[in-house]
Image 1 (cartoon, rainbow, N blue to C red):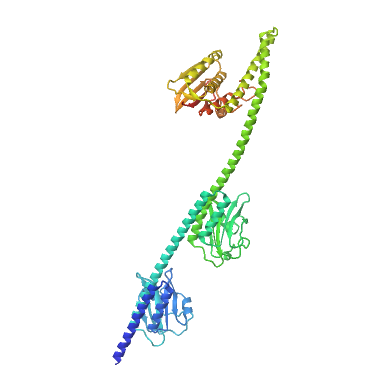
Image 2 (image 1 turned 90 degrees about the vertical axis):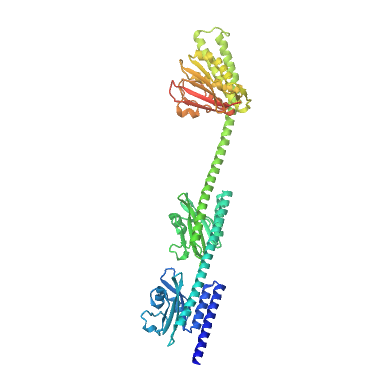
Length: 597
């Protein structure tokens, strides 16, 4: 009968164990709440094995420390508060060896240790099994009995089975946590990319600095889901950081200024390195003047552009709020980098806009000056023509003897008066010619440069001979006809020839060439005269500019001829340039190009 009773108890015990294993398996598949599942496993072990206490330890990431996360014992608080180290005590030894053990005489085992906070009375028996995952210990499960109640092998086997179930639960929970963490990181990356994309859109559509800075701060708040965000920019004029945008659930700090190195943001600016605090008020440098009372976690990152710190972006949460993660700080740094580029672009835009306004004002002033100049030239020219005509007329009459005979001494100054009156009349004609070029529209028509150049050469031949010069021409037959106002173009050629004659001493040579070039034709006038200093070549086409502007200059003129040439050529859609080494005898070369007809 005793054998049958024993067999019945064993069968009942086995049934309870199987039922517990099935129930644990159901718990594992029904929930991912790790602590709940481990408590259920520990409770099954404690109940079925009739132990006085049951503790379940997990190995910390350092690989040495184990902490009890479940303790069914009157002394649970002490057990969970005191860590166990791998290799110390029976629990630590099992964690190190990875082999389950049954110890029915704890007092005789030299490995036994006293846990602080538990009674001096030692438990008499212990079974202990490691939680193994892929051959590595991740925790330990231990049961104790007081008194003379020993464990048997079946007890240890059942505990090993429960430990295997606990390992599965831990692995599932960790896989779930890893997947959840990966999903959270992926979502955070997606949010970051979205924030950066939105900020890029803001940057591309908004170049006003104040609205751009506000967009940066709002994107930071949206991304990090914090209570406050501030943006400071460095003001070189005041050598300070100035808060330009502050969006906060407590009083904003817009307008607050900091010296470089002062406070949290001043230090970030001075060092160019982020500062992250879990609790602002635990920081040694905390200053009530710069942070409101509710502030807890804070992250501050520099705005850096090409190695230069432009300012600081700060975000913060309420006291007791979640600390900033590395991912959040990295996200802030990316936002700050893009913001720095946007800020610099906005500053460049503002500078360009201001420069454009200054240039526009200067251009309008120049146009007004040109208008006054044109009116002055026109008025003076008209006022001079009549008296000059009279002066020249009477001078010629005197010179011709119509008003009486003149002595040789009298005739010489009259000749000078006549010549100078002619010079003044030529000057008035040049001034009026420039005004007509500006006011009148061109009337271009197909024009043969060969014909026009030959006519000019014929007209200048007498003057060239009288000046003791020679004039050569080189007109290439393949030079195309050009589109030009013939009357205006003749003035260009006449002015260039007249200049060449005036500035070339007797015995010199003038050369005129015509040749095709890039969709048009070039006319080139060269001489062997006094030349032009190279540093003045760019100015010879300015109105009233003269290479020799001194009162003792040798050559007459007021510097309008080449200005007229330049304006006529450009008015035809062409270009003109002057070349010279500035050495007497090597002269100058003027070349202009006009488009083909």
